[in-house]
Each structure stands twice: as structure tokens, then as C-alpha cells.
Image (cartoon, rainbow, N blue to C red; front, side, top):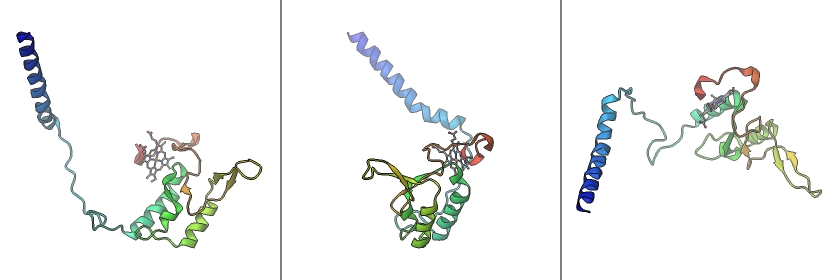
Length: 147
Ligand code: HEC
């Protein structure tokens, strides 16, 4: 019994020592590039978003990324919200209404599901409807920004 508990104590301290030593080994092997700390307008608790930046970001999303990705964690109303991109409400309503991937709603009085244009309260769905991005067969490789 005594020997066993000594042995487990030894084993435990060995494990502890190797765990404590692990970060050092990691540092010695690491030649990771230094990343400069950035100053973002939204840093800290008093930070705010840069409206023009958010508007450009949505423009990139709309023109490039939306070919494959949805923005389902955002609703159309988020594009109108104060402190965000603050696009004009009428323009966002119009864009949501003409977005290619309509919203499945229902059931209606006949018990059928139906498609309707998106409202401000709806999520921004990918035009391809799938949750995971879909790469059309002829599009080629995954874009570098997504790797
Ligand atoms: C041609 C289709 C296509 C376009 C356009 C595209 N993506 Fe992707 N994206 C993909 C695919 C496919 C994946 C999944 C890659 C994988 O799983 O290896 C992906 C993955 C990602 C991921 C990682 C998601 C995760 O869950 O890990 C991010 C972030 C991303 N894309 C951002 C963007 C942004 C930002 C744009 C626009 C500038 C964009 N993508 C445009 C197809 C696309």
C-alpha cells in the first residue's frame, strides 16, 4: 500500500511536471509571426462601429460572398439599426423584398407552406438556401479568403 501510494505520488508529480513544462516546449518550438495589436473603432466598452466601414462590408458581402454564404445570424432590420450600418429603412426593405432566396412561411388557411419575400424581421439567407455554403460545380476551387 505504502509503495503504491508513493508510486502514484511520483507518477502524479511526473505528470504535473510535464504539464507545467509543456508551455516552455511550445515556446521553444514556436516561431509564430508577431501580430501587431490593432486599434479598432469598436475596441473597448466605449467603442463604436464605423458606419461607412459596415456599409462597405455589406456591399462586399452582397457582391461577392452572398454567391455562396447567407448571413443568417443577422436579420434585415440589423442593417437599419442605430449604431450599425444605418442603411435607410426603405432601401433595406426593398432589397429584402427582392432577395432571391425567399422565406418559407405558413401554414396558410389551406395548411400549405408558402414562399414570401423577406421582411425586415427575417434573417438574411443565402441565395442558395443551404446553411453550408454551396460551391457550384463550375465555380472552381474554394476562394482563398475561405480557406
Ligand atoms: C464560391 C463560393 C464562395 C464564395 C463566393 C465565398 N465563400 Fe466563404 N466559403 C465557401 C466554402 C465552400 C467554405 C467552406 C470551406 C471549407 O469548409 O473548407 C467557405 C468558408 C468560409 C468561412 C469559414 C466558415 C466556417 O464555418 O469555418 C468564412 C469565414 C468565409 N467562407 C467567409 C467568406 C467571405 C467573407 C466571403 C466574401 C468575401 C466568402 N466567404 C465568399 C465558399 C465561398
